Image (cartoon, rainbow, N blue to C red):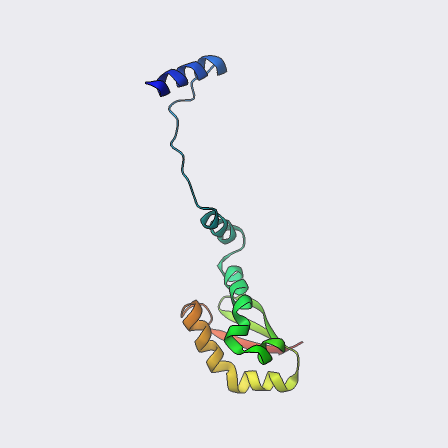
Length: 119
């Protein structure tokens, strides 16, 4: 009964009746932030940031200090490498292991290929 009286009083005060009040939809802040990131940034950019944060865990301290993920687009992950010897090691030895770890951690469709570039 109170909501009817309140609505009538507000309608008289405002000069129009907005209709029945809609119930509040509450959302957790983390869920709202994730939804906004997906809407404005895209899934690849979110996953790219996650890969950058997890890079040291995936490859170890030494390789992480000499390389870093720079871009993820359509399943292609580009890794910038500082030294030619580390580039060779990552490209020839570590590529299958890194790809496997990425797929285990972020899902099988997240990264389909890795390219290493000197920079």
